[in-house]
Length: 82
Image 1 (cartoon, rainbow, N blue to C red):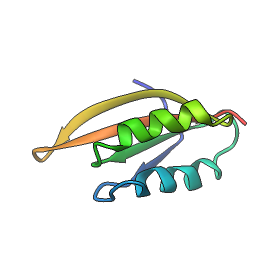
Image 2 (image 1 turned 45 degrees about the vertical axis):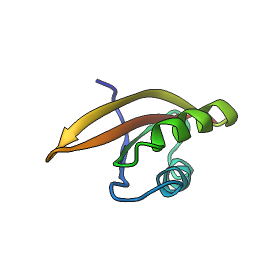
Image 3 (image 1 turned 90 degrees about the vertical axis):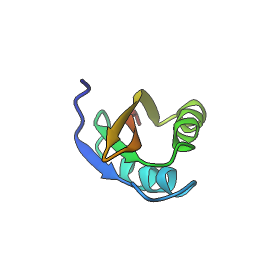
């Protein structure tokens, strides 16, 4: 289990909104803190991977899937590094 400092629920939003909302939220966190993002958009998995590869101020710590009321949710743990 990864410890996180803030959670962002973007369930119901489609690409590119989960990523855009996460980019806004991570800017409000102090360096070293972690944001947990919960999305219902399957495309967010690759979006978050690409963001972490191209950005110098975030690190993708982990991703996962969980079920809620028969729906699949995708979780992303992003740490602010700069």
